[in-house]
Image: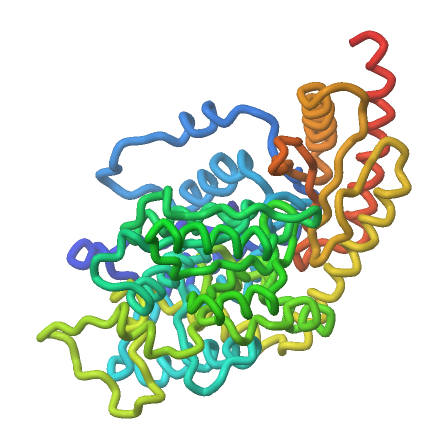
Length: 486
């Protein structure tokens, strides 16, 4: 870079920066960030090999002295970053995309620089309230009453873990190992991990069969619960998915809520992917019944396009989280007198953590909720358009009409399961090799390898989805032409 190196730090204060040094550090980082974001659409959607070499190139021992700031930024942006999935780019249609709103990055800079303690009310009441506002916004979005509350987590996995712990405390005795949990065979694997971390044998998690639309089958659920009761076990938790990672399916929430009520099960809805579609009219219709759940997981780093590390758990009665997570120590300040204010450390696993609330609050304050609603509506439209276009492609089968913004499809070929799977993996590799878009695959309960397009990035618009469909068509033609010589 042409700008001069930052001033040398004061030897007597080696970790302190002068105002001039700090401005230089921030300005140089901002230059690289702005350049990176401005070119996201032109960067490859993924990378081709070289992972081990890239990691080896930046492996180093603990540095004993400092390096020039420009050199350090070059290492990050020019050497470490290029060998990675372009999660923030418009061509990232894999897994469940996010996007990484830069406003949240600015919020993190502010939050980390002021370095206050938002998990305890008395430590930073104003900042605490900003985060409490966010939690209340989310409770209102779900349709929860005033008794509801929750916390911002590192992501859906941590939120699901706390939900299992809360349900265990609320529905089972201290000797809880006969407790059984129920979810569809499409449920996110974090539920099984959460159960294991909460002390349950993995065998206690019942993976109930899904129907032709990949939704949990209520009849199979009733049979599983009845069988466990006959065996002397204690059914206590039902997990419903509001947008599965595999196919985007939404379990039949009203019917499952009725089963949970009759069987006295805690109902948890994992809406990490689909929950924020509640901001849209279509999303509210499709997620009807979520408001009666005992707890709900949301992931702002999915449906609100925020940087990774932003999840949320809500409970219909926040007191259930206090009973399962609250623990005081003699060195802690007293809790708030107002029962409407609950220290976040008393309803979550974490005591010390960063100011997550600001990374949600700032984008909403700057952009307004309408902007997020409009973007989510666009993603629903794009997924429906992609499904309709794929259905017109000869040799492609769409497995189910998208309920949210995820489309599952496969290449139709003659032959057995192994040959079909090989053909679909070949199509996936061919599309991704072009690096215009990045898509992923998954396995159905029958072991069929299928392809997925998930549109959930605020930078993804019709032009990039059109590019995806064009690449799929062209790759199909190329693969068909190779078949005689294969």
